[in-house]
Length: 134
Image (cartoon, rainbow, N blue to C red; front, side):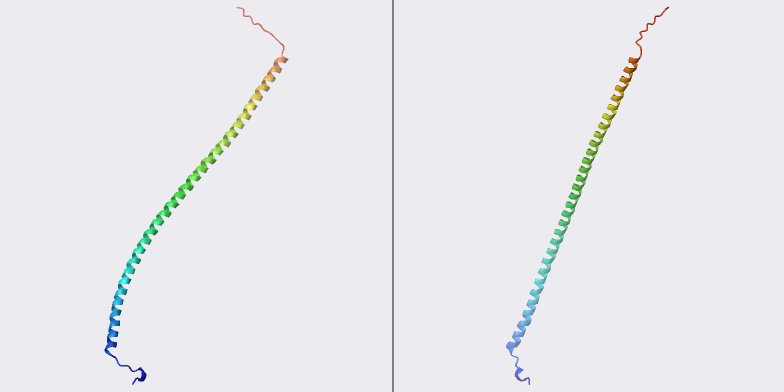
């Protein structure tokens, strides 16, 4: 009927097919167990990665906070340095102004003394004696 393709099914063929089917059941059970183990491993790996991520985020937040504090300290330090320089310049200017004022006062005093001396030189030398009669 089938010509060359015609084959008789023997008991061995049936046993072979049954063994394959039974082995497929064992294989699928093994695959199921393997998949469950893989799922457990992946779940554990996921948890470890999430923990690692959380720890790294905390470390990054800590580093950022440290950097911000360092920048704040440096800014305050620069502000103090600038304030000190400003005060030094202000003191120098005040000293310079004070020196100029004192020079002007001293010069004015010398001129007044010179004028007074000239006036005294021009006046006649008069001695007055005041007697009180009484």
